Length: 262
Ligand SMILES: O=C(O)CCC(=O)C(=O)O
Image: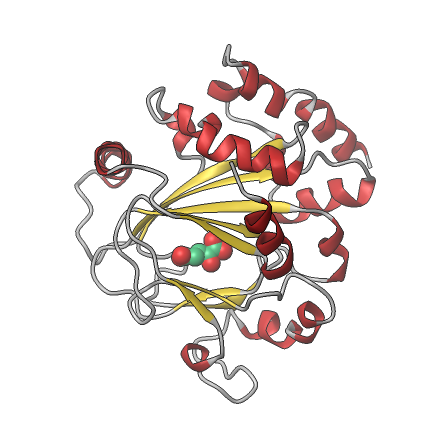
C-alpha cells in the first residue's frame, strides 16, 4: 500500500519506487521463469549481450500470471488508478527495447492531450541497475505541463543514433537515475520523460502496465494509437477465475469494438 507521501510524490514527480517489495527467493523464481520464456523464444539460453523482448510476457505462464494481481502491485494501482482500472499487458525484456546500450529520452505517451489520461508502467529490474550502467533515468515532473511540452524536442529526436538534447549528449541531460536492486519496483506515469544509458552486461526486466478505465473517445483513440493490443487481453487473463483479473478486463472487448467503430 502506498503512503500519502508516496502518492504525493507520484503525482508531483511522476514516479515512485517500491523498495525491496519482493524477496530474493521470489526474484530468483521470477528470473528463472523469465529465462525459460526467453530461451523458448530464442531457441537457446540468451547470452548476456543478447537482446530479446516479448509482449505479452507474464500472461504466457500460469505461474507468472498471479504477479499481475499481487497485492504489492494491485493495491498501489487501485490507489492511483481507481478500482475500475484496466490491465494493459506485460513485457519481458533482456537488454533494451532498442537493442542498443541506450534508450534515448522519450515519453511513452507524449503530448499535451495524453496528460489527462493516466497510464502507469511498473518496472521490475532483475539485475542491479546503476546510473551509468543501465539504470532507469527520469526527468522528475516532466509528466506535467509546461515542462512536458517543453521537452517535445527530446521526443522528436529520440529515435536518432546520436541526438543532442538541448546541446547535451543524452547521458548528460540533468535527471534522476533510479538505481535499483532486484526486489525493487519502479512505478511511473507513462507521460514522464525517461531514458537509459550505459547498459553493461546482463540486464533483465519485467514490465507491467495498467491504465485508468477509458471514459472518452479521446482515451480510446490514445490507446489505439500507442498500444492497440492492450484492448485485446490475453486469453489466460480473460478466462481467469480470479475476481481481480476479471475486473481488470471486464468490458475491455466492448471498448475495443467501440474504438474500432469510430
Ligand atoms: O529499458 C528500460 O529500462 C526502459 C524502457 C523504456 O524506456 C520503455 O519501456 O519505455
